[in-house]
Image (cartoon, rainbow, N blue to C red; front, side, top):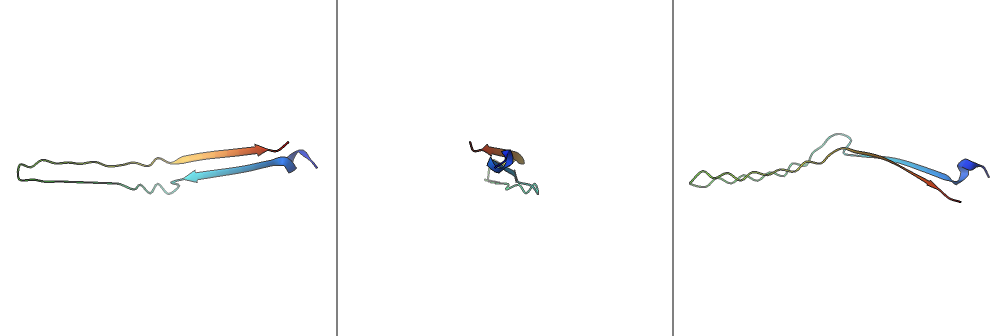
Length: 53
C-alpha cells in the first residue's frame, strides 16, 4: 500500500455554463407602480481531498 492508495480527490463546478435562473416579477397597476426582483446564481468551483489513515 502506497501513499496514494489512501487518498481520494474530487473536483466540482456548479453553474459551469453560466445558466442563471432569473426570478422576475413585474406588477403594473393603474398608478404605474412597478415591483421588480431577480436572483443571481454565481459560478462555484471547488476541490475536495480525503486521506484515510
